[in-house]
Structures are given as structure tokens and as C-alpha cells.
Image 1 (cartoon, one colour):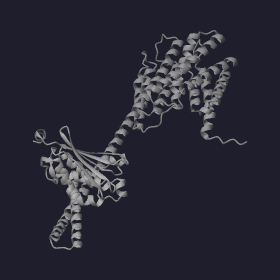
Image 2 (cartoon, one colour; image 1 turned 90 degrees about the horizontal axis):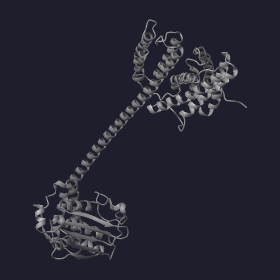
Image 3 (cartoon, rainbow, N blue to C red; image 1 turned 90 degrees about the vertical axis):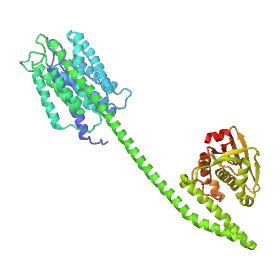
Image 4 (cartoon, rainbow, N blue to C red; image 1 turned 135 degrees about the horizontal axis):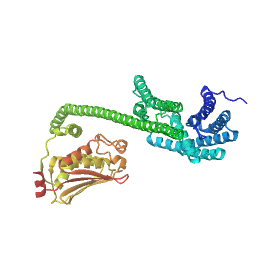
Amino acid sequence: MRFPRPTPRALLLWVGGPATIFALSVIGVWMIVPRLPISLWWPAAGAAACFALFTPARQRAFAYAAIFAAISLAGIAAGTAPMTAVAYAAAGTGETVLFVSLLFFRRPDFRLTSLRDATRFAAAATIAASAYGVTVGMVSALAAGGDILLTAIIAAASHASAVLLAAPFALLPPREEDAVGWWEVAIQTVLLAGALSVAFAPASRLPLSFLVFVVLIWAVLRFPPIIAYAQSLILGITVVILTRAGYASFPEALTPTEVAVTTVTLLGTIGLVTVAVVSSRYDSVLRNRTAVASARAIADAERETAAALRARYELERQREDFIATTSHELRTPVTIIAGYASLLGDGDLDTHSREWVQAITRNTARLGLLLSNLLSLAHPQDDPDPWPRSTSASDLIAGALAPLSDAIGAAGVSIAMTAPADLAVWADREDAKRILRSLISNAVNFSPVGGEVAVSAERIGSDIMFSVRDQGPGMPPEVAEHVFEPFYRGSNAALHSTPGVGLGLPIARMLARRNHGELSLVTSTGAGVRATLLLRAAGPLAVEGLT
């Protein structure tokens, strides 16, 4: 069986990780606190956390075994009794297992990208280190009779600070472009070194450790996360080395144990402040960039919409100009044709010639109506203003039917008219007749041979309602909702070769509304169409409303 060849990254992880943990564990023994069986700082805890976090989830069991082996061997190599070394190794491995489990509890992935993540990270490190501290306190008490509480506190603080300073390197957020120059990093690093030198100078008699935070905050607020975390880790290591060498910037009256507690507290504070501020800043920057990107996307969309509206407006203008120009150009020859047809009709013609002239007259009138509709659609403002007056409803229906007599006869449709003689409408007479003529013409065109078109008028409150009902195929709802759009023709119109270009109803509604009325349709498939026109009833109220 052949195993896949390991990659350089895998070799570095599985060889370098345990080796680093072993070396740092040996170094940790060098930092034993006087009169206590515990180290001033335990950097191996941070290395173990990083090693476990860098390891793929399905391989972490092997990583935990490697951590246990490395810490056990380091303890034995440093002269610790084998059983004690194994106990410490078990506690350290358990700490790492608990820390990683808390981080990934109900989360498939974890990165330090917000203050909430930083809080979870700090809590996991604290809980895991506290569990380790309690275990080590009991082990040390059993092995050497030490102070359980004090040992537990120093051990927990030592391990927590190490994890807070080292583990963030394995939890870095996705890289973002940062406008930070290396010259700024260099200047800040020099100033941080200066602050550290002042705080730990042999001649210093004041506790000046807080000075490092003044410069460190520059890094956590400005630099990329990896640089800020690197500075914090290097700063922590330097503080430990200076403290171990006797250059601690603490009051001289402190005992070695108190110096140890103060040192690990300082290290933990450095790590906690760095993680919290860097994670919060990253989240804030990411939110701001997302907001800016969204604003830019919205602005781009609005510009595209505006451009589309301008293009649509220009196309609409060109369409209207084309319709108006064409209609004007056609109106003159149509008028001439109608005039000569009228002259021919007044002459002495045989039967066939008279039928031909009548056909010319009918179609010329039809073409003239189409041109008028086109002009009304293209430039409605050019139509004369309505001249409302009182007109009998029955006279309006009769006036609308007169030009349609030939078409009604040719379609084989009968008209049933119901209009009380006392009903009068207050509207422009020509507009009202034109609307009714359009509605009746549509009803005739869609009615079957032998069908009936019912035309009626009745008073509804202060209005007169005209109804035109046919016995045609009706129309589905998806067609009915578009019938008032210019040039729209339903599928039935095309299927039955019904004449028209889809302007009758849109213009009829426009005429109704400019006379303070309304036009609507009620229809369903297979049940015909009922068109209703509401116009003001003639009378004092109607006249008062228009004056």
C-alpha cells in the first residue's frame, strides 16, 4: 500500500509543531517560580493551541496525541519525575482539547472577525486554563504539598496569557487591503521599543509598564491583524525575559510569587486588549467597506436606471414624433381621397361604381379615424379642449351607432338599446360619441354571427352609466389587465383577424377621464365582455362642478 507523499506544509506542521512544543516546554521549566512548582510563563500552551488549530479537524486526535507526547518527553528531559511529567502532559493536552472544543462548539469554522468572536476566544482560553490550573494545583499538592490555590492561579494565568498571545495567529480573519505603509510600522516599532526600555530601565523607580499600552494601541488600531498580534507576542516574550533577568518594572517590595502573578496578569492584559481591539476594528472596517460597496452598487444601479429611463424617454419621444409626423403626412392625401370620393358619389353612377365609391368612402373614414387616434395618442395636448354640455343619453347612443350601421349589418349582429329618454349627460358630445362608438365597434367585432350587443344607459347616483355587453368569447384576466395599453392586442384579436391596432380602448379611457368620467371592463373567458362608461349626469351639480 502506497501512502501519498506529504506536502512541505504538512511536514512543517507535523514535525515543527511537536518540536516547538517540546522546546518551549523545556524553556518553561527554566522559568519555575521560586518556592512554587510552577513556571512564570508557559509558552508551550500557546504553541499547543496553535498546533491543534492549524491541524485539520479530522486529524486533531493525532495532534492531541503529539501534544501529549511532546510535553511528557520535555518534562522527563527537564528532570521531572515521569509520573508527574505524564500528569502535567495530560492536563496540558486536556486544556488544549477543551479550548478547541469551546471555540468550535456549534460552529464549523472560527475566525477572530468581531468583538463577539474575541469574547468567545477569551472565554474559551480562560475556562480551559482554569481547568488546567485546578488540575495542576491538585497534582502539585499531592506531589510536593504546595499551595493549591496559589499554584492554580499562577498556572491558569500563565497558560491563559500564552494562549491569548499565540493562538490568534491560527485564527486570523480573511486578509483585507490595508493602507498602512511599512515606514509607519517601523516608526511605531521603534517607539514601542523605547517605551519598553523606559518601563524596564534599571534606573526606573516607578512602575511604568503601562507605557507600552500607549504605543501598542497604535498598532492594534492601525496595522493589519497579523502585525498587531506579532507585536503583542514579541512584547510579551520580551517582558518575560526582562522579568526573569531581574529587570521587572515592579515595586521592589513584591515577593517573587507576587512578581509572577503581576507578570502573567500584564501578559494576559496585553493579549486580551490586542485580541479585543483588533477583532472589533476588523469588524468595523469590514462593515464600513460593505456599506460603501452597497452604496456604490446602489448608486451604479440608480445611474443605470436613470440611463435606461433617458433611453426609454428618447425612444418614446421618437415614437411619438414618428406617429405624429406620419399621421400629419397621411391626413392630407386621405382628406383629398375622401373629397373626391364624395364628389364621385354625387355624380350619376351605375350600381357597381356606386358600391365602389361607397367602399372608398367607408375605408377612407376608417383610415381617417385611425389617423385621428394616432394623433390623439402622440400629442393629446393638441386635441381641442372638451366643451361639456347637456346631451341626451339616447341621442349619444344613436349618434355612436349611425356610422357603424354598415359594419353592424355586415357582421350579422343585432343591437338592443335601452336608454330612458329623461337621462342626460354633462360631457363633450363628440368625446362621448367617440367613446361609445369605440366600445360598440369592439363589441360588434367580437360578437358571433347572429349575436346581440346590448347597449344601455342608467342613472347611478350623480352619474350616468353606459353599458355595452357582447356575447363574444371574452378574455382571460392576463389579457384584460393590458387592454388599456396603447397598441396592445389580445390573442383573440389576432386569432380572429379582428381589425384595429389596439388604440380604441386607450383613447376611449383618455377621453372619458378628461370629461371627469371613467371607463372599465368586466370580463371572463367564454362569458363575453361588459364595458361600462361613467359620465356626469346633466344638472345643477354637474354644471357647478365644471365652472
